Length: 330
Image (cartoon, rainbow, N blue to C red; front, side, top):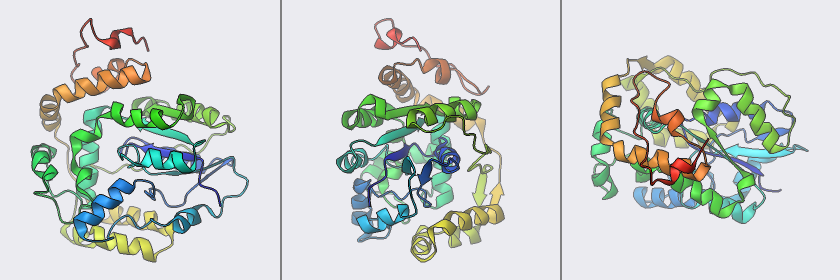
């Protein structure tokens, strides 16, 4: 059985679940019934095993187990999977290239602060993060890099190195190092959210499948701001989820947790003032991300991320006249 020829590699909380769900509806596409098998990010596997003293997380390790996810694929032109950890992984893209040098790689990027706020909430919700304030989590990054103040159920420490997750240009550099540019497509989340149909059509054309097919477009993976109840946090322990993932059919796993969220999630309002503080703290990192990623993509991302779509986003200053970004005209 051949390896898949298409990979949605990230980032999490940037529309990857929606893209996965829409592509699954296309008659020319077979996507793994288990989203996020995380097979190729062997660096995360190794870090996790060292942290926990054995294999507790990332159950899809063997080639046989991984390829079994695609055994129902027939004559589909595209056979793929979506593991949003791959883009931040230092090994995943290279590992994919070793077995499928002809693969197509799709990445989705989101405005950095919105991305981090959403990513942090997901980490809290998953039981990986014990700091309910992203500001506090950012302040702990240095200590966590030294192995201190790590939640006991985080699969590996790097999941909590939030600044590392917004170094988009470095993540993309790995893609372009191992694959020709025509086999790597980068979607901007804000474009995708504004025009699901148009962006999906572009992706279909790039994949070489019927671009006129229209899936049922609906909001995917949208949870209100809030937290799990104490009982739910106990039931939703990562180790228990890892055990369940090995016991139930892959088609049921995501449905079980989607149902659980609907029952146990307690909504609460989001603080806009915290976002402003995060922007202040990460000001230089954000500017560097926007500028360098713009240069890599040859697209002026300041026009999208530098000022906003949302009223609470300030305009980031554009780079100086000596910057290479000024040569980028969309």
